[in-house]
Image (tube, rainbow, N blue to C red; front, side):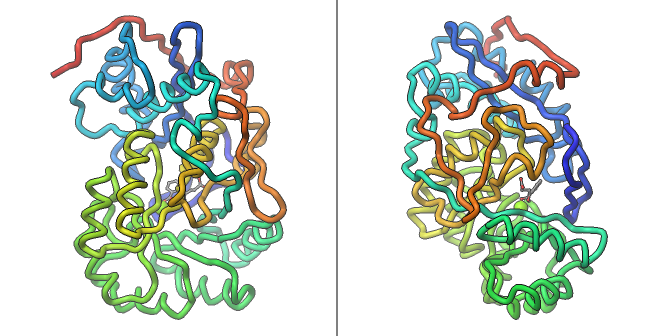
Length: 363
Ligand code: OSB
Ligand code: MG
């Protein structure tokens, strides 16, 4: 699916996505999941090829023929595969999705959510010029988005913040470095404090909380961790170390809804604020992010925004829309709240594999 506009982070530019969708067939019910792994192993060590491999050869065969009672129940059948959380999450979430459809209750209720309106923010990539960025920010502010997040890296940071703050002194503004800085940059990162940023997301290495804790003690701006939080234990360690004040939860990054809810609960206990991250999802992943965002500790605007910012045509109906005040209304429909469009998905499909044979868990 080609993106409406390219998306550039400190690790590279994306112009389109090949997306793995998972369908579970469970006694006449279909459940859908979307894998957030990218084309290349740049954001994380997974990519769509490793996800395809682990889904087809490990995760999917572990559920065939099993009497899986619920989404939460699915994880106990999964084999002892290390990592590959995005692949695993796609399948686990498809089971949750099937459970919601079968029980005729909204998925967000199964997850324990309660919010009916979600505040929305946007993530704006690195542009070809500062002027282009100003225009992008203007478009999103005018569309009503409640928080603007700017991707940054050395050479595209304080000058850019100055430019945006000059134009919009008081909008909720944050930045995301995707690990573009090191301990040599602490003095430079202190300059970010001048711009009243809501947060700086994952400034240091993708696998680090120790040096983030050191940095958080030296800067006023709140650190938000993204890449490094793989599970609830990581969230607890970060909280105890003081490595951040905010955690962005991405359901794929932590391996599915079950772990995402646990991360949420640990953050809530430690007074770490949450918001729901995005991975340029198509409609199914987007619908699932919306369901997750209804949990009580998601108090900041998330990166879950309207379908039309990404796709000419999304694979769900209705598409995700955002009100002029910057909210998504949560659907009361049973299941994921959005219908999948099988004909459009079929038209876009370039590769398909049906897993029909069970395999004993591979350990
Ligand atoms: O770090 O949050 C990130 C997209 C791809 C990989 C990493 C990130 C992002 C985003 C996009 O920021 C958020 C969105 O889906 O709009
Ligand atoms: Mg991020």
